[in-house]
Each structure stands twice: as structure tokens, then as C-alpha cells.
Image (tube, rainbow, N blue to C red; front, side, top):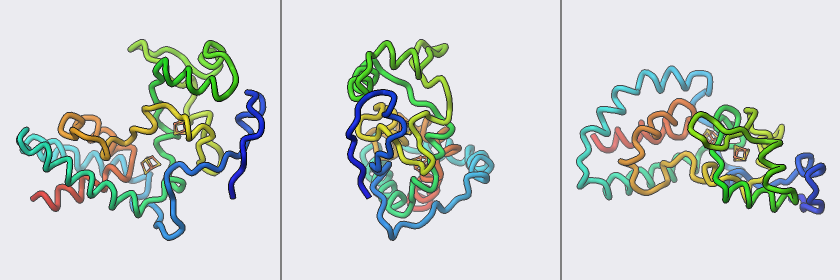
Length: 194
Ligand code: SF4
Ligand code: SF4
């Protein structure tokens, strides 16, 4: 069912059921394979191995590494329903750029300063982040109310679909503690690579 955004005032904004899908989720997709409550332990157990895996890849293999990661990323996400998970939105906060704040506040029909004052704080790195976690735009069915104009950090997550994965190895290993898809991608890539 698709709900149309008819009102754009901030008051009404959050309560709207904007049924935009967090990821393209087809009905035949499976539930996530790894229970979220086991993920941190599994990721911790795999951490040393994951670091060693990346350490053994030579810079000249960067293109080959990207190709494999992107292929496996697509396979894994074709089987994972992010709406059954939403662990990233529940436990991590995206960083907001000025451009994010400008875009989102414009769509919400409020001033950027009002948006920042209501939803954001500045962290120790001088970045804007949410005041509260889980994300205030995540609804009870795990849909994102601002999906079409969400922060870039959200649309880039979890980075296993991004180029230059070798430069993102630290964040990829870190994300394997939060995102079951990243954990799965790493496990499959290691199996194929070895
Ligand atoms: S943590 Fe990963 S699998 Fe879960 S909702 Fe986020 S991107 Fe999807
Ligand atoms: S803005 Fe949307 S995608 Fe980003 S953390 Fe919140 S609910 Fe998730």
C-alpha cells in the first residue's frame, strides 16, 4: 500500500505512514539469517580472521576485491529483508552534513536551524548526529519516514556496495558487529577468496 504525503508541516510529518521501502523488499525474500542477538559474538569471533583477510589482499587486487564484494553484497541483500532487521537505524546514528540538514528540513517545511535544534546534537568530532537513538524517523514497522531524502550516511550504509572496499576495511569489520548482511558478506567473500 502506498500512502501519499499530503501534508508537509513538521507536526504532521512524523505521524505520516510514508510507506516507502527501506530497501527494495520483494515478498519472496527471506528473513535475516543471523539472529541479531548473536551477531556481536559472531563478529567478535571472526574479527581477527577478517583483519587477516584484508591484510593479505594486495593493493593491486583492489578492483578484483570490489567486484567480489559487490557481487556477494547483491546476493546477500537479495535474501535479506531489512524491514525485519533495522538494526542500523535502531543502534547507529548517521552523521548529518549541512547538505543533509538543508535537504531534509526543506522537505519537512521547517528551517534548518529548527530541524537541528529539535533532532540533532554536535558530537566530540564536531559532527551533527541524532539526539536520540533509535532514529526518530524509524516507525514501528521499521519504515523510514524520510527515506527518499535520508542522510547520505544512511544511503551509503553499509558500504559493502561502495567502491574501494579496501579503504573501508575498518568500517566494514566494525559494521559486521551491527549489520548481519555485512557479517554474511565477509564470510562469503572469505570462502570464495581462499
Ligand atoms: S543492519 Fe544491515 S541488514 Fe539490518 S537493516 Fe541495516 S542494512 Fe539492513
Ligand atoms: S533516517 Fe531513515 S535510514 Fe537513516 S537511520 Fe533514520 S530511519 Fe534509518
